[in-house]
Amino acid sequence: MPKSVLVMLSSPLADRMAGVARFARERGWRLIFQDRFGFAHPFDWAGDGVIATIRGEPRSLAFLRRLVRNGVPIVDLTCDVPAFPCARVCTDHVASGRLASEHFAERNIRSLAFFSIDPGPVRDRLWRGFSEASAPARWCFSQERPDARWDDWDAVSRWLSAKIAAAPRPLGILAYAPTEAVRVLDAAQGLGLDVPGEVAVVSGNDDPILLENQSVPVSAVDTANERSAYRAAELLQRLMDGEPPPAAAIER
Image 1 (cartoon, rainbow, N blue to C red):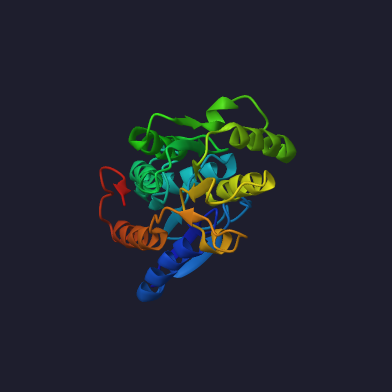
Image 2 (cartoon, one colour):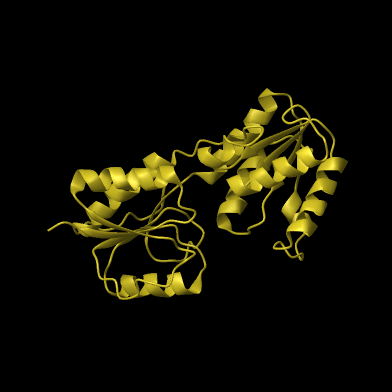
C-alpha cells in the first residue's frame, strides 16, 4: 500500500519540494502539499507520515501534536521549535554563518552586519557562526531595534536605510532569509550605493527564483535544501517502517 505523506513547507522553496518529490516518486508515496501559513485543514487528515518546517503557529502545532499522540512520525526540516518531539534533518546554520563571514573576508570586506526580522533559534545560530568568525567591526541590525513594529514597511525601510548609510564602507551584510536580503538590496540601491562595490549582500539561505532575478543578483549560502529534503524523506521512510528516531537532529 503506498504511503500517504503530508508535506507542510513554508516558505515552499522549490528545491525542498523537489527533494521530497524525488524520493516520493522513487517510493510511490502519495503526497499532499500544504502551506503551513495558510493552514486551516486537513485537521481530519489520517496518513502515514509528515515532513514539515515546524515553527510557532498555534494551529499547525496543535495539529502536529495530535499526530504525534497518534503515533504518526514527523520529520522537521528546521530547528525553530527545538522542544517539539520529532526527528529533524536541518541545515548547520552555524557553519552557514561562518561561510558568509569567509566570503566577505576573501573580498577584504571588514565592516560587517547581520540583518533579520524574525527572531528564533535558526537566526541565532546563523548570527553566532557569522559573528564568531568575523572581524571585530560587526553588529546585528535587528538587535538594535528590539521593540519596534517589523510589519511597518516604511518605518523599517527608513531605519534600515539609515543604518546602511551610517556604516563604514565597503559593507558586507548577511541577511537571514532571501526576502530580507532583497530588502537590504532595495535599501542600499535606494541610497544610490553601488552593489556589490559599496554594499555586498549575502542571504543565509538560497531562493534562486527570488535572488537571481533582482536588478543585481544576490549571493546566497548554498544550504543544499534539495539534498536535505531528500534525506529527510529517507528518514521518514525508515520511521514509517518502524525504526526508532535518531537521538539528535541530523545537521547537513
